[in-house]
Image (cartoon, rainbow, N blue to C red; front, side, top):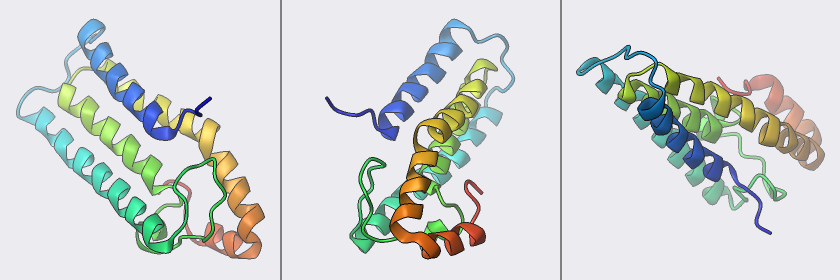
Length: 147
């Protein structure tokens, strides 16, 4: 059976944002042109994900949270955040909430952040600690988990 990966949860979160906006919008808080500001966090999130993916591929290590990495990636966007891909996904969800403009989609980025923290971040950090020991501890002291 295939494990559910973070991008799967992310797609569900995007759909949930739209469904909440359509079914339970509560109140519209942003309208055009202000909601177009959502394009900024969407673009930043896409950039973070692409840059992190490129860094993983350049280093020749795995992207999947369920595999053991071959190398500790600490350069590029990994100097800003230990989990730039999750940060990017949260930014995209925040941008989607801004674009939609109603209240309820703003709950989704928070829920998604808590979900990936619980399901993936802790396990990934344990794996990195086992695999890279002191190098990972030094990196962890230097770079924040999210931002």
